[in-house]
Amino acid sequence: MSKILIGALVCAAVAGVVYYVYNNQEEVEEQLGSLKDKASDALGKAKKQFSKQSEDAQAWAQS
Image 1: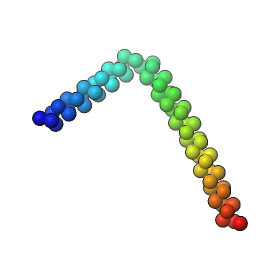
Image 2: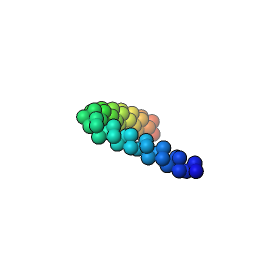
Image 3: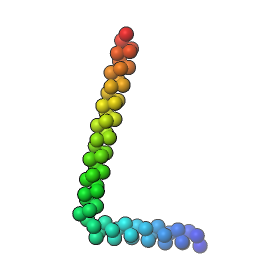
């Protein structure tokens, strides 16, 4: 019985998300673009930090 209720709840949640996305496409696309920009910035920062640590480790190994 509980599996049926959980399945119904999941289906209702998915239906709600699909309905929201379908009716607010412009807003969703804007939010996804914002998330993409933030992810790109975070990746750039991570790459910069990794390369700095790599250079520091190489300098330490050579000394």
